Amino acid sequence: MPAIGVLALQGDVREHVATLTGLGVEAFGVRRSSELDRCDGLVIPGGESTTIAKLARIFELLEPLRERIGAGMPTFGTCAGMILLADRIVDGTAGQETIGGLDITVRRNAFGRQVDSFEEDLDVRGLPEPVHAFFIRAPWVEQVGDSVEVLASAAGHPVAVRQEHLLATSFHPEVGGDARVHGVFVDMVAGR
Ligand code: GLN
Image (cartoon, rainbow, N blue to C red; front, side, top):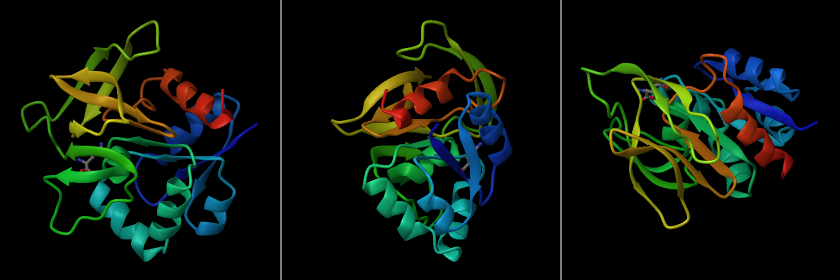
């Protein structure tokens, strides 16, 4: 049974732990590097990317996260977590840091004020039925590198991507009780 950590500095940690536990995975919050060491895979949740980045620096997790992710640890970022995995941000705050690793440019709060938050049935490559996706002040992907596969798009922009051991969604698959996207990630961690 793989051990999957959920970065627990800020954001909707509990929902991810519950979804992963429901899939039969050992899931736990990660706040220190000793907990990161136990992870076969990591989820970076939604929340506020600027806050999570600042706390990661304060908790001395930023460099350990960069090392583990750079060394191939499967990692799944949702919403703010997608921003934290991105190599490049548009509309970040001044000096906003990311963990990086995922060769994408992401636009924060991309869908704008009008559609700040919305739900949509989304076709996701590899899943036979659409996912009912919840977008909450979500980013979208503006540009992807050659090794990035686009798994889903909304409003003409990628909102789910994969690059080798990295998976990221603009939406919140931990909301709504559909565990299939987490299932894709658990398969990545288990090497299936
Ligand atoms: N807008 C948030 C950010 O910039 C992300 C929102 C979310 O994770 N639901 O980090």
